[in-house]
Length: 240
Image 1 (cartoon, helix red, strand yellow):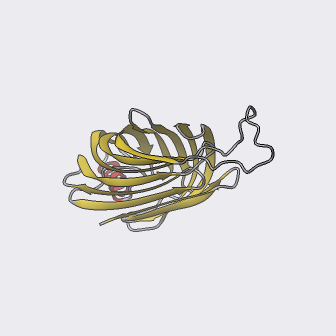
Image 2 (cartoon, rainbow, N blue to C red):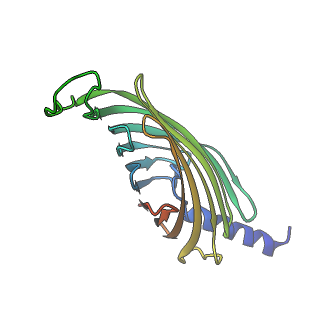
């Protein structure tokens, strides 16, 4: 390989390592990462991770699921360990395989609909109030991600599940991103992202496709947009 091509390849890899994409749970050695996510009518999530090395990180998160049709509200606080299983530093690209797992406590509130029983004869009287139930339990979290990135193309697939003996919430996500220009190490990177997410479990099953605009520079990253139905989505990350 010619020295010029080798230097160019090293520079490209340096750019990739210095510009993490969303949802990479392990970033730089001795770094702290704060992330937040908002998906209208689906979920809100915040995470804080510390990476002692570039191979693993540990931290905590808080997730809230919105009622999407079953009068079912769920809040969960959890601890999690993230591992980088494999990284490929190619001449002008990078690929990664991550897995994670953890445990936490959840609070679930179920409010049944106040619908009168057809067999009851209340003679036009008021419908008795529905009984709201709230219960806490131990929950588990596990998932994984595979991603590939060049200076102009980004691909990722991930799956994340939160579950207990009575509850399940799973998100499967596929993202494809295109950059209109090849960014420099200290420059502003811009990406157009198509993101498809499938939500399943104890909320109403649904699939959303979102169009997002992503920006990042050094250790700050953000993206925002909306689904094709007009529901807003936003994510932000800060590493220090």
